[in-house]
Image (cartoon, rainbow, N blue to C red; front, side, top):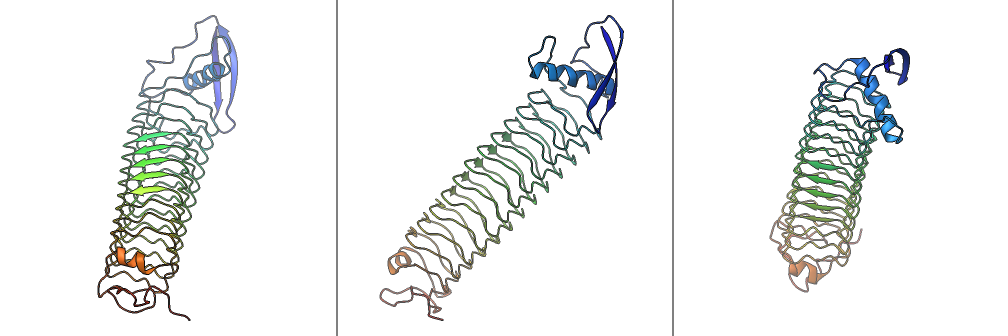
Length: 333
């Protein structure tokens, strides 16, 4: 049976007219410029596949070009979308969960509130996408480009993110609980109030990032570079920051209680009024750091760390820290 379709992109409705007996169209081998009627049919058969209805077929749009297309709210969950091109497309609130988007090009696309949970985005290009509120929970991203993407309030719980480029991205209030993030670039990114609770980060670069009140409590962030980052009010309680670099970072009013700070480079960092109760500072470098007003710091902690004449100690005096000097106690106001 052959069916003719007209496609209402805004309302996502398909209108059908029976023409004659014909086999359903193939979902592969379509021309690069995919016609709307073909796409409408593919999506309808894909919905049948999702609902396990007779005749349903999983959508396979491998290699297709869909630039500037509007598919708000479309359900392509589980579809094969490898090497597709979606430049400037509008996929607002689309369901792309569990999709295969390997090498897909979505630069400049609108993906507000899109569901990409469990999707495979290896080698995908999403530079400059508009993705506030996107769900990337349990997604897999390998060498994915997200430069200057708007990912405000996006969700990354339990995602695996490896070798990705997020420089300049807007990630305010994003949630990364229990995610695994390795060798990623966040330089200059906006991470204010981002949540990395129980996340595992290694060899990630946050140089110059703006991350006020970021939460890395109970996270592992080893060998990461936070040089010159803005981190006022950040929460690092019980975090493992071993060998990470905070060179000239602004860390005022931060919580480092019970954190593992072995070998951390705080050279030139501003740590005024921060909390250090129970933190391990073995081998930490505090040369030229400003610790004025730092609280819950002990003489034993400061003796384990490295200080110099340029260090400002908790009581406001200059270093290096000397045993029994009492300089570990903040000056009373």
